[in-house]
Length: 486
Image 1: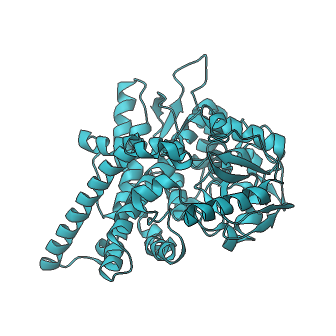
Image 2: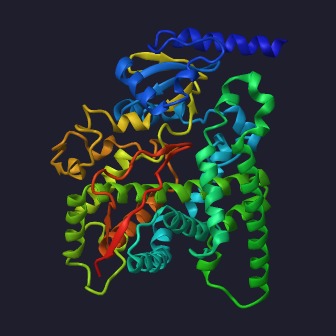
Image 3: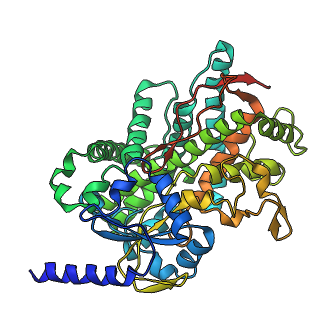
């Protein structure tokens, strides 16, 4: 009884302090969840336009504050990073893995897990991994060459997913998969489904009466299956490692994997087995989808805007630093010599952010932001999608205009500078794999545009570019014609 009373007192305090923050009226029990059910992105954006950069909503019985726009997000997550850094622990994630994973943990455990992952994603390590990224570009190109020969439209989604899966598998386990093996495509499909259904546990997170049925949720079933697969990969990794120790000597590069570092910390007692496995799931799901989804969205946009695609190809083709027989456009070598490619990448991040509202945070103490006091214990949501669709910052926000990021001194000719992008999150809890994602995205997109022209099969309507909403933004499964350039 004391615990229940204390919890009610805490909730009442949060509600009282946050009551001065504007926002839509909430219903009993469901709060504003009923308004988010069918089209959450439009609803979040409409609320932003009506109530401003800071507004409050109630998700079930959980008081939440939504922050929109780079200035206010920076104020919170950079200038007040200690207050806004902690993750909010949703009930479903506590039941799933105790929030002891990389994305969900706080304090010392998060520091340890982040250090492990980042130790294998340093600029030096990523540069060494560029050979593997180049090999993956060659592998996917062989598949696309066959589609050029067939002359039939086809979907790119599975190939791009396998590309990113192989890169992240090399960082995790030092392995990769074949593009044409049906079993490997089933693994990608499992990861895709987890990413898609990850937001579906929302009702049990915020409405306690639904919680007894959480195991029937599709996401829990998929996550359990994926965890079993990860456990098998770990056992295979340990077996291969023991064979190598008893056999021929291996290079230091062969021994450098995230899994090797995780096992080392587990054996030292720094992390538990649940943290090890669930962090692998985080890296696998996040690493596979972040780059692949962004590349697919970029190709959709370039097919819908052939003038932009032609301009990008001309700049790649005329790049003086590239030899005529160089087919893979490497990030480390060419990133400063193809400026229009950087503009296309920024505009893709803006228009199609894979993370739409980010993972939730919680305030560790009362704090004043933008003239409002936000109570300690409030769930904080970063409204990334609406931040990138703000017409004051990005004129014609629904149009694909890479040129908007051309800088003239300190200003941007279209009003939206690169610092207004929050696609990887902001502050101490931003995406740990952002450097790898940039390298992958740059290399694959440039290489594909250098080799192929991507064409919309329809002459009457553009390719669908509105993604499917799950944990993140999923590109629709469009069909492309492609023509070989070289």
